[in-house]
Length: 460
Image 1: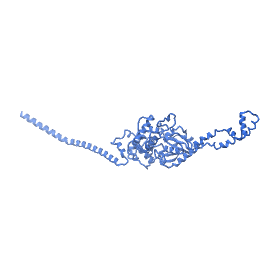
Image 2 (image 1 turned 135 degrees about the horizontal axis):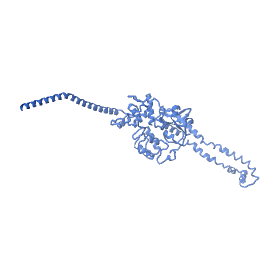
Image 3 (image 1 turned 180 degrees about the vertical axis):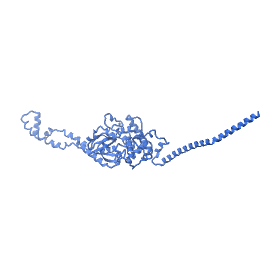
Image 4 (image 1 turned 90 degrees about the horizontal axis):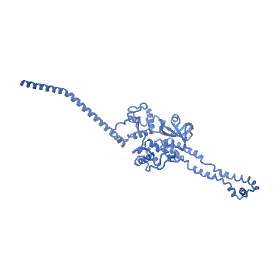
């Protein structure tokens, strides 16, 4: 028994020693693995926090971000569509940043994309990053709740070239010249009566909601592409009026004020061919004989007065009607046309700014609006698509049928909507407020004109 107990005890000691040696041999690698796991976790967590803190520090230090930065906090991942880019059509240079003054072939692509999304009017694109393009980039950044720097980096390009980018929109809290233009238009329609200040506040929000309700649009306070085009169309329902039932816009187009009233009395004076009263007023007996001859059939006196009175009354009305037959209605259109053309030429070289209607800054439809009013036409502030659909002006199809002074309208690159307007000058040229040129210019009616021309409208 004692020998068995001793052997068992020695076996236990040997087993414990074996286990201890095994543990000692495994302990160091296990501790090393555990240490590596803990170190990796701490390193990743620390870098993530440092990334957020540095981003926050940079954003707060930037004066352009202001409160709009907090629309992107906490650091949200990129939208689902940000990684999906039409690589076959657009090229993205990693790390490249585009800004005002750059000249690059990729700027051309940016312009075309922003035109399709409604941030720029349709125009012949160029490789120059100018002020209108910078403004369009800021509007795109505004729509995506980003800092409005006006510069385009790789991240913004991926948003711009994604499969479902944000189209042009105006919403609550926005500030800009386009908001001012919206307020002016809503005031014309009777929905807005507050101060025009370019800030989309509660009053503007209420006006937009009322407009959408009156025009059978989905309930919202956002001015999307559909609402924007309707607000600036000739068929927008104003406050209490339904002009679309007759197909006529809510406003009236009238020529210059002076010629119209002067022409109206003229027909009243001309149809007074009361030649018999004129001879009766003369005391000579011959006209009275005519009157008696018409009343009593005396044969002898009738032949003698016929030759004598007829030449006398005819010369007298002709001099009186000679000043009258100059109906000033005929010269009025040409006069209005020349006033329109003169007003257009007076704006050459003035800067292009989206949403502006003069007198110092213009966009394409604002230029037409301003100059037509200078010519005496009482019209509303529409956009290019709105003016293109005004049935009160004769539609002109085909470039060969255009004449000097006709409005010309252009499709975007997708040929899905009208997004630009100019004025044909003849001699294969047209005048317009060009976003590509950055100002009011005269351009050649060449290839871009021919391929994008939708139709014209003859105002005069």
